[in-house]
Structure formats: C-alpha cells, structure tokens
Length: 438
Image (cartoon, rainbow, N blue to C red; front, top):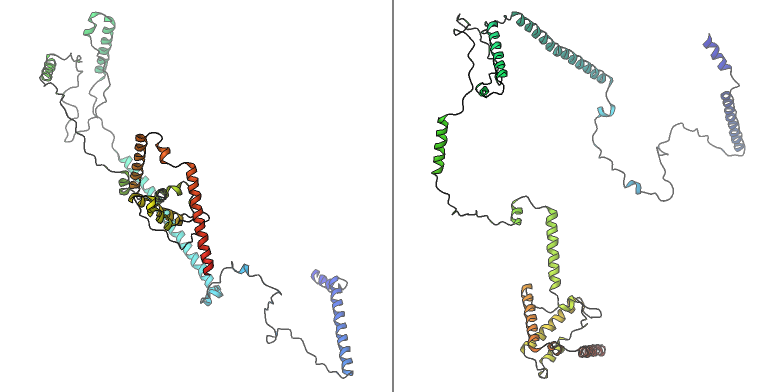
C-alpha cells in the first residue's frame, strides 16, 4: 500500500521542475511544427513546391565520413611526433586471445586448482605424520632399553677402612716429626712425604669372563713410602768428564774462509713488467705522451739558434747574390769559408720556408731546400769542439781577442742596413719588371 501511494503521488506531481520543463519543451516543439506548416502553405500558394525530407536517425556513410577529425587551420607542430615510439609491426593474433577465456575454461581452471591444493594438503599431512610417529616409537624403544639394563656390578674395594686410617696416621706422624725438628741440622735428612700431585685413579676392573674371580691374587697392602732420589753419583760425573775430554780434543778453528756470492741475473724493471701483469692502458698512454713530448723537445732543439732565440731574420733570402759575393775573388775566401757560406744560405732559406717571419712573401707552394740532418750527438760534439777552439784562441792571443774577432755594434748596424737596402732595391726592380711585362 505504501508503494502504491508513493507512485500515485509521483504521477500526480505536475508542479515540479521536471514536469514544467517537459511541458515547455512540448510547447516549443508544437510552435516549431506550426511555423513550418504555415511556411510551406505560403510557399505553396506562391507556386513553390518544397519536398519534405525526413531526417534519418543514423549516419549516411555515402555522404559523411565516420569518426572524421578535421585538422585545425594553420601549421601543425610535428616536433612531438619525433619522440613518439614507433608502432609495433602487425602480427597474426589468435581469435582466442582477442575474445578471452570462456566461462567453461575459467570454471575448469578453478576446479583443477582446487584439486591440486587439496592433494598437496593431503600429502603434506601424511608427510608430517610420519616423523611424529617415528619420534614416538623411538621414545618407546629407549624406555624399554632402559628398563632392560642390568645393574652395575663393581669389584670389591682393594683398600679397606682400616688401611685408610693407617695411611692417615702415617701422614700425621710425618708432619709432626717435621714440626718437632724444625730448622735443626738434622732436618735435611727428612724428606717431604706428601705427594706433590694427586694421580688420577685407575679404570675400575671389569668382570672377568670364564668364571675367574675379580679379586686380584696379590693383596693390596699399604706400600712403604720411598725416600726421594739422591744427588747424581759418580756415574754422571764420569760421563761429564768424558764429554769435556772429547771437547778438548777438537782441532782449533781456522779463520781462512772465503765468501762466494751467488750470481744474480741482472734484470731491469721493464723486463719484469713485461713478464708479469699486462701493462695498464693509462700507463701506456702516459708513456706514449712522454715519448711524444721528448721527441717534440728534440725537434725544437734541432732548429737553428736564430729561430730558437727568436732573433731578427731577413724576410727574403737572395741565395744567388750570397753565392756571387762569396765566390768573388776580392772576398778572399778559402774553400772552408765557401762551404760555411753555402750552408748558411741553405739554413736561411730553409728557416724562411719552415718558419716564415712577418712581411715575408713565402707561399705554401714554396719548398724548402734540402739540408742534411745530423744526429744530436754529432751536433753536440761539433758545438763542444768549436767552443773549445774558441776558448783556446782567446787564451793564446790575450783577453782582447774577442773584441778583435767580433765586429763592433756600429759595424753590425751598418752591415745590416746595407743588406736590407740591397734586398729592397732588388725587390723593387723585380716588381718593376713584372709591371712592364704585364
């Protein structure tokens, strides 16, 4: 009854929000229908026929594109697609994998799982029951063995109570005698009758087989206490005397000995490293860099002294003019000086090509004249020889020899200016000839 009354109240509720909204929508729909009907009548009266098209509820696949997403206007940023993972290649997929497991398969799987769990529980209970049963049986067997054991049968004591009392009395008598004597001269004749250490008891005798009695035939009477042993007698003294005589008969030692050291093979640390563990890559690279740096330093040291000391050098070298000047008879040069001049010309040309100075007209196509390369040891010996000869010349001819051999600063400046002017004049002449030729 309560449910029926509640349903009636809901149906009779025509003043709620939902009822008002429904009535309003219905009124609007009726107004639209009347407006469209009036419009069609007016067009028909004017001679215009319109075909009414009923709107289909579904989608017209011939006219529309299902699930169409029209791109937005303008340029689209595709930078996010570069980091997007590529789709996996399409492979054949079984229909069973797409559809999933069926109810029957799920039920069978659960049933097999329950059966497996039940079997494990039954086997586990049986496994746990066996050790418990074995432990209980072992306890019962041990109890039966303990009840069946025989009583321990020990032999009769060898020392009775009377003998023990006699031993105690003898011990007391010895202590009393020592106390009475004290520190008298006769005390040295009395010994210490108390045992130093108590010896362990012997293993009790077991029952003999064959019906033999366990009591020993020799009675265990109290043994008379022994005196301590005396000082070693003449026998030990004779042995010591014989040993001393044998030691005296040994020959005297001789100090003429010679020490021979074992021969040790000279092995370097590098050889040991090669035979041992393989050299580390970082150590190998470090040694290679050090070797390259040493080679670079040696190469820089092979340059001429003018390049090493960064002295001023000519921007151009006229080898032909140098050769004509040196071969002129007025110069008065001998063969050795001519060789030195020729070598100087080669060095100047070589340094100008390899290490050009600012303002030079050397291009990359110019090649340096070939010069002979000498070993570093030979060059060091030559420098030392020249230095020794120069020092001996100064010592023989006096302290002012150096001033007489070397030109003054004024002469050097004049010569330098003259050479530069000649070179500039020659360059200007060459440029004029080139201009005239063009």
